[in-house]
Length: 104
Image (tube, rainbow, N blue to C red; front, side):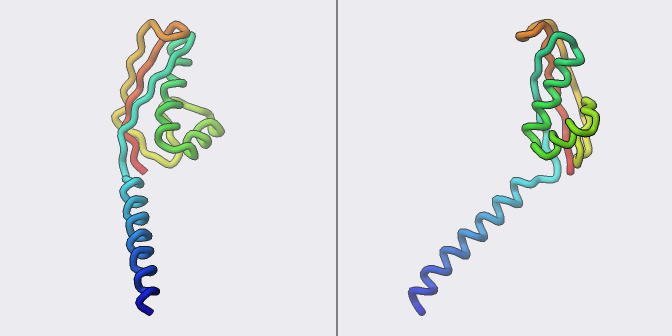
């Protein structure tokens, strides 16, 4: 019985720690940014927004791609404080940086 308690107690502590880490990782709101490059402002914005979604949730990115792929939309999230800045440069002629606050 004593050995059983020695095995179970650390396992329960470990399971509790995993649960706590999972809860912390699933915050209700996050701020993300992405950078993209393209031959036009629209294509660079699209690449930058894809980077934001991929850094946030691959599932949201997949739904974004399947549902019209409109920059600023994030399936499953409410988007606020969307900011973008584009300038000549990057590998393809135009570089954009997008930041946004996403809440689920």
